[in-house]
Image 1 (cartoon, one colour):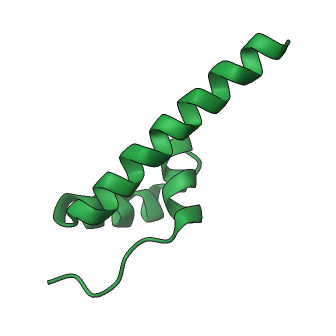
Image 2 (image 1 turned 30 degrees about the horizontal axis):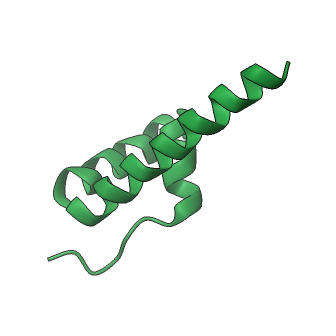
Image 3 (image 1 turned 90 degrees about the vertical axis):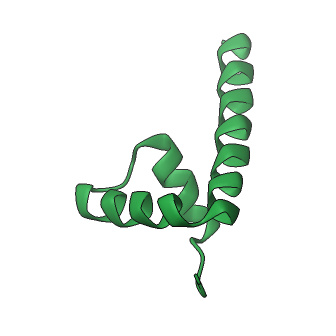
Amino acid sequence: MINHHLNEATLLFYAAGSLGDALSLVVSSHLALCPECRERLRIAQQAGGRFSRRSRRRR
């Protein structure tokens, strides 16, 4: 049973590929066992994709 979850900043940096190797491994391991954080990551990735598309249209 998981008692602690990843914070939003960690999920966002992970989704952007901005974490170092060691922390990425820790996050990946946690995500493998935690459906709640996987869902939060999925939402963060969707939001990031929408933000990215909007930024490109404004240029």
